[in-house]
Image (cartoon, rainbow, N blue to C red):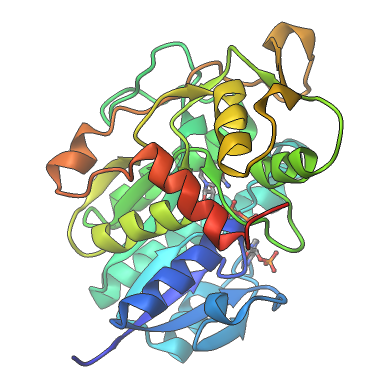
Length: 302
Ligand SMILES: NC(=O)c1ccc[n+]([C@@H]2O[C@H](COP(=O)([O-])OP(=O)(O)OC[C@H]3O[C@@H](n4cnc5c(N)ncnc54)[C@H](OP(=O)(O)O)[C@@H]3O)[C@@H](O)[C@H]2O)c1
């Protein structure tokens, strides 16, 4: 089989690394990764080629496509920190909105499959479980930027896949600990870990999500909700993670949202309805299997 050239933006990130690894394992792709700077990665997460590129520079999307000549693009590069987006609206909008729409438009001109990752945080958490047709209602600047990108991309490239991804768990990225990576660290430490009993998500592993994204690429278009098999609270997820890692789940203690005031509002329940995904023949990974696979990939954690 002739391998095709896949460009993965944000390839050093939490999700991007898993996309690289799964794409390489499939044997179908020559992987070209990009981010502003290279990162220390394990050999399985290392793309075949890497390009340092700041996509938020004007003309960067065009120049990157000209240089790398991909036959498909998975765009995960983003400013995903809600506090950063709130403080640095202009800088975050450049990558999350402007560059994302520009990249989609350039892929449309070249007729190459394009997939962008969006987020469950486009919803305010009052109407779960969310189907693709539900009206977005973001509470944060990050969520608003993602909605703007979704709309702009669908306008310039109706065949693009806009994959709204739920909360992810997986091996921590060396330089950017995600929420669940921080949780893994806390579980490895000592003392109680307090997690919300009243905040619900449809979590899945970074590898589980990566497999779904690769299956969607070129085989679907429009909005798709990429979530895990179950709706669970952060507390339930923490206990389940502790169990598969062989840590005493009693270390995880319940806490309620109103006990922890935050600068960025937190939606209560943004769990997904994943009917569309299942109809496309791409079911979410079984919850327990997904947890165990994430453990295996984390070198056993602890
Ligand atoms: N993590 C989750 O639980 C989660 C949940 C739902 C949706 N998502 C979505 O999944 C995608 C990836 O999230 P993530 O958690 O993997 O993020 P991440 O770990 O913060 O990684 C972001 C990646 O984008 C790159 N990047 C950032 N700004 C860039 C720029 N201006 N030019 C080029 N590259 C840039 C980063 O590398 P440099 O900093 O070196 O540039 C990094 O490789 C995002 O679209 C996010 O909205 C994530």
